[in-house]
Image (tube, rainbow over all chains, first blue to last red; front, side, top):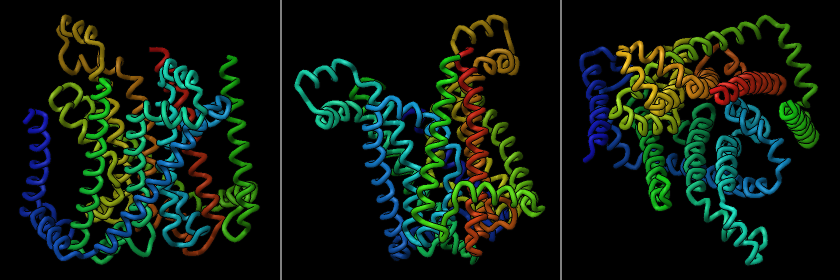
Length: 250
Length: 248
């Protein structure tokens, strides 16, 4: 095991032990947070009893839908936009400021337009992710070597074939980065929206448990959300490193 | 100069495009759920004449300002500490990136329980959004300082604080500024999000309250205000950012 890995494990373990000690010593009172070992116990009880599986499935389905929408539409838009220089120059300031805007502020508006359901949540998750995908794809397409484009022309490939057979495969690592960002944003968007206002879902249940002082439900659910996003992000990053290493970039 | 003009022209076309799309959406959806750009601006003008609006705006801005200061100060401290110690930096960077990508909103109930309902919960929530980007950019800036600068400092026998003040910090300023720019946006996101859940004051509360009252005017006006504010500040910060990076 590398020193870096040992360091990381020590940090996480140290943090959990510190929380445990603070809780047991009463510095953090029980109403605020149960000791970590109780949270872990509740977590395993919740999972083994299959509680909230419907909620989890619903949230995950929405997350995956928002992710797929952002990734597919973002990749298509980025690929098309790459061919139009003027359009790209005009949209550039939008891309540069997009992430400064609190997208969640649009949630109330979407609720008013579409009603309180899955639509507004999907839209928030999609909106958070799509621009990151577009920007990443554009960035990747900018790096396609001329020799590949020339080869495509020599083989008389049309624009669609060039994209599918030459440029997008070259951009594989960028596609993966885009997917990683879209997934992270879809999680943030969907769970965040559920938390603010919704009828169901993991975010909603966390908010509901909070209002009812139900720490035995709230903390395990928070732990689950954190685990899901950290594992998803970790897998994507790992895959990204594998691809980059194969290309000799990293 | 020509390029500057070109850029401004693009921004104007973009704004015209957004207004056109907005107007078309309004024509398609109608008065039930949307307002036109002009109606929104007119309503916002009226809203700004009420005292209630300024109370909420002041509350939001106060929370946001304190959160931003906390995010920048703590982010810089963490970034410098990790940047100067290679093992810590290598180990903590991926963990910070992982923290960056989790839905932090799920941590909000914990913050509420710890800080209680009130302005400090919002400040803490805004700050944790902003700290990570500031820390990450500072970390990478400190780490990528040109070795010759650090060697020069060592030759001159500078102490660690002197080294940070006279060499590392000036060399890292452009990158750090980028971090602060990103941190600014995320702190704003965090503060508004905090206000949208279990809060009684601020623009986020105003938004959520407007849903239950089905007050489309308020929703549109406040969303518009937040977007314009965020975009305007970010544009100014971007200009400074670019200058810093080119000047270096």
